[in-house]
Image (cartoon, rainbow, N blue to C red; front, side, top):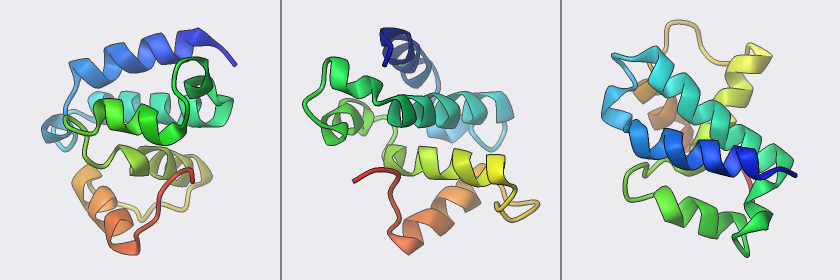
Length: 102
C-alpha cells in the first residue's frame, strides 16, 4: 500500500473531468488507471475508512468513479467491446449496476 497512488489520484481526478473522456483518451486512461491502482493496492486505506469514502471524495466531479476500475480492467483484459467510446463504456457498465469494489 502506498500513498503515491492517493496523491496521484487526487491530482488526476482534480485535473480531468468526464466531459473530456471521449475527446481526450489520455484523460480517460489516466483516470481509470489511477482508480484501478488505488482499488487494487488498497491505497485508500491510508486516509479513508472505506473505499466508499474515497469514491465520495471525487464523485461530484466523477459520478461514475465506481466504474473506472472495472473499465480499466476490461481494457487490460481485452474484454471491452471494440470501438466503444469512453462514455459508451461507462453507460454500459452503469446499466449493469456493476461497481469495482464493494
